[in-house]
Structure formats: structure tokens, C-alpha cells
View (cartoon, rainbow, N blue to C red):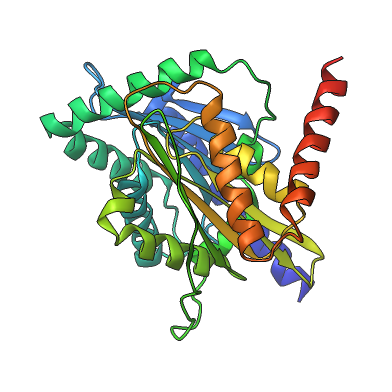
Amino acid sequence: MANIIDVENAGDLQSQIEEVEALSSIYGDEWCVIDEAARIFCIKITDDIDHPKLKACLQIILPHDYPSAAPPVYQINAAWLRGPDRMTLSNSLEELYVENTGESILYLWVEKIREFLLEKSQSTDTVEQTEVRNMATEEEEVADDEEMPDYRALKLNTENAHLFENHSSDEELPPIKLGETITERRSTFQPHLAPVVTPRQVRMVLEKLYENKKIASATHNIYAYRIYCEDKQSFLQDCEDDGETAAGGRLLHLLQILDVRNVLVVVSRWYGGILLGPDRFKHINNSARNILVQEGYTSSADEATKAGLKNKKSKSKKTK
């Protein structure tokens, strides 16, 4: 049995080498090797080579059993890519993988993303709205001078391959709780929470939330989740900024500090036209903390506040 597995892995490795060589040849400077030993790569994708309006970066990890038995693990980074659009694109990539199971898929994925970018850029209204949102985000980023850990590696967690697994069709949608809003300078923050034990449930909850037109129209829908895997005694966790740079990482950091598990927290923000600077992160985390206390994931608000202060002090010591 071991020999059979070794032969399959050798075949997968050879397929990966050939695929990477082909992609490097096709896309040239757009193709980037991040860590060859760990099989981590990145490719920059635009809607138009000569006059790009929209661009995205596809980060991928090739598991040892890709392409024979597992899909690539991926993350699409693009400030303009919001919730509903991100979900649509992710579903398209998943469908492509299912239709071509066992085959090299990266070229098809890259071209599907490029096709998606082209369709978006052809809509003048969408491009104008994207530019306005990006300007607001960039201006707020300048206002933020706080240091924060880099969570890019976390987003490439190979455990995310579970998102592609076929789960039982009778898996139930977890109950979704709604928290109280926080409003400052015309920006509104509202938290949502759901107990989750599988990545599939995370996706189900997000899809359900995006069915709500108000939530789907939010400027940002930031989320983070932590799922405890009993068999491995480790956490499956991830986060999403949805255009609010570093917000997802901060939200996940809060969940880690409070040591909560098997929960998804989403904070929707409707931008009111007035820049909040670093205060926006305070409101995002306060919204999340409030709903975690509300739903009994922390014993008290005081405990949650102490955890936040403890983290702030530890970061201060590191800085010194």
C-alpha cells in the first residue's frame, strides 16, 4: 500500500512541476514563486494587459496529492472584490474543479478569474463605485499607524481544502444571531454570529447573510471563524477583510485572545462618508466582543475587556 501511495505522490509531483513550468512560460513576470519547497505560488491577474482597470492576486498552495485527489488551496486578494462577487467567483472556481477532478486546474482558474475581471470592468457603474470605495479605503489606511501581525500566511492554511469536500446534503444551517449596532460619524457597524463546526457551515452562513440585501450592500463584511478539530487537537481558522485592510486579522486575533471556538463572527460596516481612522478597528472589535458576550462565548464583558488590554500590553512590550 505504501508503495502505491509513493507512486501516486511521485506522479502528482511530476504533474505539478510540469504545470508550474507551463504557467511560468505562459504568464512570465505575472507568475511568482513564493516558496518552491512548500509549493506556494502567486499570480497577478488583470482584465486587460495593456490598460488594466481591475486586478487580483491569486495565491495558491499545491497539496502533495494535487491534482489526483485534492484541489489547490487558494486565496484571492483584491480590494474591490466584495462579498457577493467573491462568493460568485469562488463558486465558479469550485465548479471548475469538480468538472475537472484529477486534472491540472490552475490555467482554467486563472482564465476564469480574468474573464470575471473583464465582465466587471465592462460595467462603468461598477468601476466608478469600486474607485470610490478604494479611495476611501486607501485614505483610511493612511490614517492607521498601528502595528498588526501579518495574517497572509494564515489565509493560505491548507486546512481550507475542506471547503471543497462533499458534505452531507442534510447539513443544517446554523442559527444566526444579530447583535446591536454601533454608529459613529455616520458609519454603522453591526455584528452577526453563528455556531459552526465545519467550513461548509461557514459558507452556508455567509451565503444566507448575503441573501439579505442590506447586508450584501454593506461597504465591508468582515469575518473570522475558529473551529476546533478534536482529532488533530488543533484549530481550523480563517478571516476575511472584504476590502477593510487588516480588519479580518484583527477580528481573528480577538477570537484567539478570548479563546472562543466553533464560532463565526461577521461584522458589517456601512461607510458614512466620514473617515474614522484607527477608530474603525475599535468599533469592529467592540461589535464582535459584544455579541460574543451576548451569546455566552465569554463569561463577562469585563473578562473580554481585560483580554483586550492584555493583548495591547503584550504588543507594547514587543514594540519596546
